[in-house]
Image: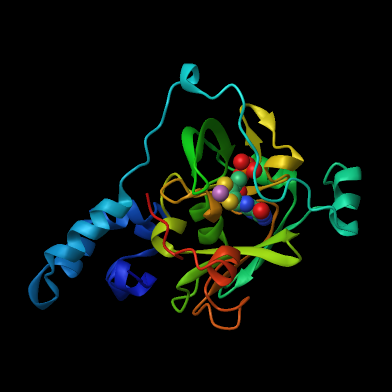
Length: 251
Ligand SMILES: Nc1nc2c(c(=O)[nH]1)N[C@H]1C(S)=C(S)[C@@H](COP(=O)(O)O)O[C@H]1N2
Ligand SMILES: [Mo]
């Protein structure tokens, strides 16, 4: 299911304050609920789907954390540009947030670490048949998007990564429900340590209601777009383009 921000917040009826708190809150907002779920638009299936998508992924206790968190896919981008950033301890790294936003951002790692943080112990599920429980920490993606000022035309958030996987640039995309989900963060720490190269340093996406391949590592740029056409092969991600995995990989 594809939802626009306009559909979610019901146009101008809800002020920016409601959006600031994330879409889970928007869905709970009385006015939003009325617009979404009453009158001609009443649709129990839609209501159920939205409520379900706002639900939290299970969180675990420190005792349940996996002794070893595997890495998968690219374990080191190895490009000259990335290798130079590693050598400099990512002092030159800038996370670019752009596309359909009013205020494009270029953030240093210290800035990312100084934002309000969320930490969560969650289970990562890879389609290749393994899972691992780890603790992730970073700012909420929704807070960054709010700071950048999403334009109403924005429907997807695209993550451009530093690596080529089998020679092709890795990228991923999610919709605004996942982007503003409270557990969707840009993690720079895993298990209380600074994220290492194997797990996506300096910053990787955690989108906890989705399968592993959606969790883009080595995030260099985040763009708000109206359509996925013209990005990669147009299906919204490396695996979607090249191996026919589903774009929506909700769990
Ligand atoms: N940039 C990038 N992100 C990526 C991948 C990749 O190869 N490159 N692999 C994906 C897959 S299939 C999985 S299961 C997870 C693995 O994350 P981990 O290495 O931290 O375990 O990252 C995902 N994100
Ligand atoms: Mo995976």
